[in-house]
Length: 399
Ligand SMILES: Cc1cc2nc3c(=O)[nH]c(=O)nc-3n(C[C@H](O)[C@H](O)[C@H](O)COP(=O)(O)OP(=O)(O)OC[C@H]3O[C@@H](n4cnc5c(N)ncnc54)[C@H](O)[C@@H]3O)c2cc1C
Image (cartoon, rainbow, N blue to C red):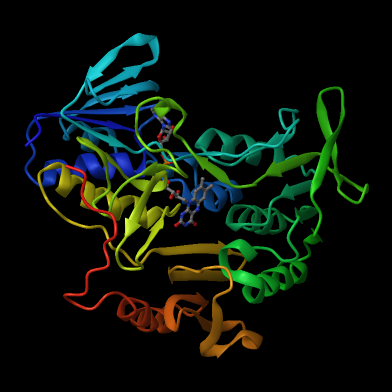
């Protein structure tokens, strides 16, 4: 049993790990290190309620100060981990402070990918609370907006911007929005939805450069040479696991912190949330999930295993996206090339559930404004997993 647990990353996964450790009876030393100088908060509302102004920014805070205080943890907020020595079991913080541990949980999430030249005034990303507040302030000035990247985030931002009745153009090199997430069929519907709500689409086009005047962005030049004028540009081109501080630590860093099925990365080191790449026995494949519910669920398993448990983490991932009056919800995985079948309703009526099959099994279900039916059909994905007694865990425990 550890007596000194350090968690690096004080957001959804880090906080949930700390709370789960205490709930499971852990009474030893607990330290939570977080780069941002504020109490843990929730990110999904940043591109929805905070950006649209429906929520005051403070509402995203996950726990009040008194509740966090009851954890009995040493909170090191506004502090950045810059190195890890797994042999000596020590984390190095900025300012060269060393933090020893018996058990370390890495929960540093992801960082937004950037584009060359995107440090101009008027160019934004939406990753943390300050980003969302700064972008909203600019949107209130009524600018022409270009959103670069038509994944979850870019699509959500486009919907909010149209909701404010501003001119917006969504740009992506792929032919339909959200193709990487849900494939061609759903992507085409997302594209139609944006057009019906008055967003302009420039798909099949990459960004060559930003045009500028006096240090401020004036437009986005696309790969066909055309320029879309813009007063504000939102770059939403995906994220990369926040692992640079782990370089040279001996941990395997391959699309995140590489863990086994128990979320163990090395003796005494676990990872949870967006940063963790682990072997999911349910699908018998390695994955890394950038979704909110996974951060909490994985943290629960990690806390159990830190305290000596032997639990494999085998979830059916769940996620959602809100755009205009559409709620998309999904369970499972959505591999490229999966066969899609309408399981309920009809895409023409904009109310349906689509099943995604891979190797003859339904591995994902996506609901479009179909919450109740989706919950029932989720069972198909649950049933696609290994049967009791069937062993699919390829990666063994490392200690
Ligand atoms: C704008 C936005 C909208 C989203 N919308 C949805 C949605 O609709 N549905 C959904 O399912 N998911 C959504 N997500 C994803 C969801 O928010 C994440 O899956 C979740 O926040 C992951 O939690 P985490 O704790 O693993 O990582 P994060 O929330 O990224 O937290 C990691 C923390 O670690 C800190 N950190 C990083 N490096 C260091 C270091 N070296 N030292 C100390 N601290 C460090 C960071 O500052 C950060 O606070 C959204 C994300 C964003 C950004």
